[in-house]
Image 1 (cartoon, one colour):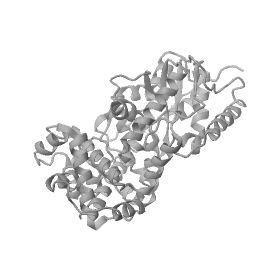
Image 2 (image 1 turned 60 degrees about the vertical axis):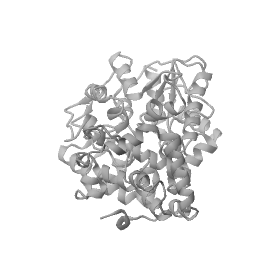
Image 3 (image 1 turned 135 degrees about the vertical axis):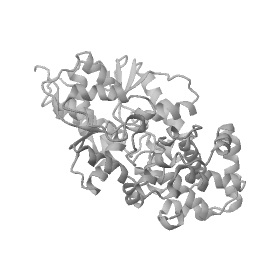
Image 4 (image 1 turned 120 degrees about the vertical axis):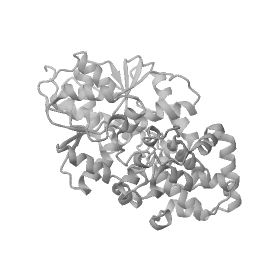
Length: 439
């Protein structure tokens, strides 16, 4: 089955290509190739051995009865490879096909890099394709809406400034029934920790803000959150190819921390936002080192638990399995630390999926794919069949996943494939099992 046989109608893609001509496409493609890609893209395009080693790495390929058109090398050939072969001159309909492949049939998870004998980074090729699509004005409608929100509000959910602070105050008031002295300090200068979240938390996962406040309060951490834009560390512009806005987001985030003179940023349980900080957005902004130290919550929770700042009154009943988020485990090497945290928290075995740690299968939601919205949902969940088979084979009922995208993707997967499993953040378990301070 080729891309023509599985084409999905999306108003953003359709209206985008309706404004294109072959001349405009060629001019834009060559401007990106010549001005932004340098030798890296050319080298990847020329050194591919056509060996097929990458095919078994891709969950799209594995979940679609090993359809060769889903193989990473095939996806490159159908997109960037075709543009290179034609000097950037292709039809608007071809751009539609390429956009669907780049935005919805690759999670940029980089598992295939580990299988390639010459180390070709297919995710880089796909994100370059997305960059071209962004410059052409051809992006799926739903993810483009989140990018527009970033541009207008500096958060991806159209959260207004007063909504943000009202939500924090609401969660503080709720938590004080349980922790009478708890505060969510806003704009506190010189705090040890600046706690940052992604915009879905104030929008529809407010319990995570409650839980984080409870954990930070219990651990007696000197912390703060910003009252002004910069609080959302997510970055859908990285995934649409709007790198100019991606750079503005990262700069805004760090500048809000610098303004408060905090000692470090602790990021909540999100994978892509962390990737935007350590691998993509920081490079675009031209920073060799971050202007403010940053740690992921997996590292922060490990500190709290091993230093005795959080003590447990009970352990979470196991056994459990876990989802290694691509961006913090394959990309950042936090797999061992994640397992150490889980062993402290859980009474029982960690049952590993057949593919785990840096070889873990993606949840099929990351890389902005889940943000492409309802038109692509069924295709996204179908691509998670291989993951569902591995999860079912563990025989356990709890998945621990320290990443928002993993939660969103696995929620759909558990429902579709009737796995009967629940999905937990680390914060869920710490909040449930920790010793409360005396009133």
